[in-house]
Length: 260
Image (cartoon, rainbow, N blue to C red):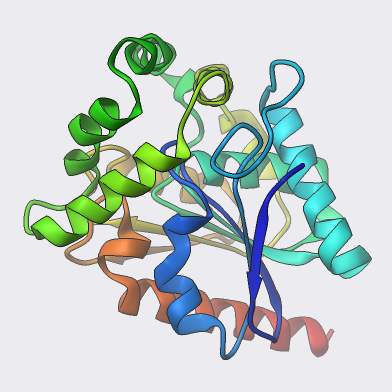
């Protein structure tokens, strides 16, 4: 069973966390956006409070699982979808496989997939073995600081580390890493005909602004926004700016849809 956290009222927004996160990664969004949006955040299959998949999952499986959440919670009206990093890769595949369920696409700190770079794909695949060897707490403590800007304080770093340590486990993390390593959406991006906002922190040391710009540049009509002073976890490190863009984009998209 897939664990979903829900709060608020208004246009529905499904939030898909990164490869080291869970629904807890979106606490800053629940804190600030529940008054104007109906927020839903999942623990992906094999993460946090969700059950492990009964078989290896690929990216299509994750996208289909997200589609099931939308149908179950929102029906055929669909939802706006925000994906962070790996969650953005899932969201992109969701938009390609189930376009009628995606009212708009918001991609934070995301890419076309690690499969676009052989070295990056290899490093991604190696992560599962490192997690198995080190355990979740050590793995999280070593990786989390790199997800934030150089000016992030100890408190935020500790929160990011705690979220990762409590969210990841095998085999789910291994399935997620393989789904990233096997994916390159470059050729499919022009097929997306959905309002799209791409957000990237200017101090992201994981994805990097250029990779996010490549993603935005491949989707017709996509808008790219830089979040100043934010690292890879832009939604957690600079929530005021991040949330303002998300809220504005969704409400503008809704108004445009209502006038068609």
